[in-house]
Length: 89
Image 1 (tube, one colour):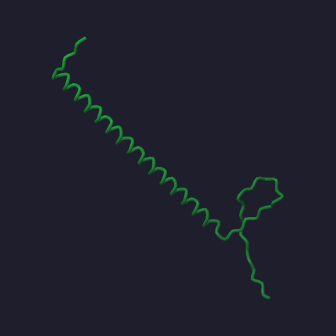
Image 2: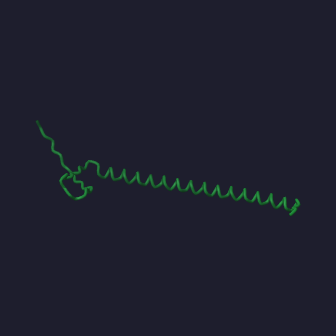
Image 3: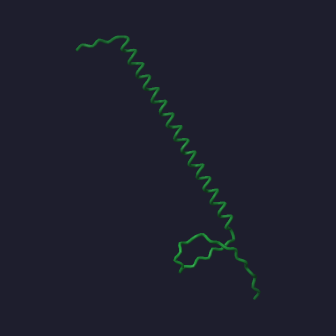
């Protein structure tokens, strides 16, 4: 089988190569944007988690937790307020 080079075949090949290049470039940009959105979503979730931990910390600030080591119940976060009295010596 003998094949001949033609101008239409050359243009067709060039257009196909350009199309593949543009398509790959577009897919790359879409993947880059998706990765940036995922990173932004992760950072926002981390900020929310940090805020919740900070809020919980300040809510429990000054409270004392009493844990009975002989208890068979699983440990739960039970806190109570403790009043301190000053002792004179």
